[in-house]
Image 1: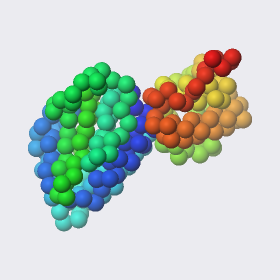
Image 2: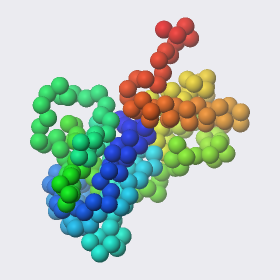
Image 3: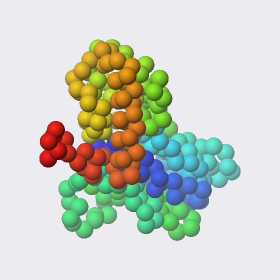
Length: 239
């Protein structure tokens, strides 16, 4: 599943659609666009614009404005297991998936915004696990893993007796960390995934925060955690 680095790279591509008039919207995939019936998303977007591309953790959304410039609803875009953002010729990251060695099928494009200048934003997904919805709920998410301070990280992670890896994966504690990123962070910091979070020293927690920061930067630079470029060698002998 895409983690923070993949979603951030997708957000950067999505930002290319900002401040361009929306001419048409294909929101006919009722599963991907649930709970909205076909046409509901189009009704509020056509004639307006996407005004900003945002992200917190693994959650990505666009702010919108109507034809009169008044703020509109947020447009949430969730990549599911293997969704990919495409704007004009630019593409977000796409992890390992079935069928990618075959010609693309029209039905794999689950949602499309046609822009007045001829460009397009399209959501590509071979598995139909992505999602587009208006005004996604962000209230349950913890702070973004890329932005959290050392102090807040220590406080949030050390609550309770659950294993430290479980705390890292809890999106209400810290938004954006998935299984691969958690493993990388713990490996770099030299911390056991099963260590009780409330028994870690402040120094260890600071080291974990710094390892997470390094891991995020490396993953974003290398195209995402799914590329396998984060941990070149996991075993102590380096092979």
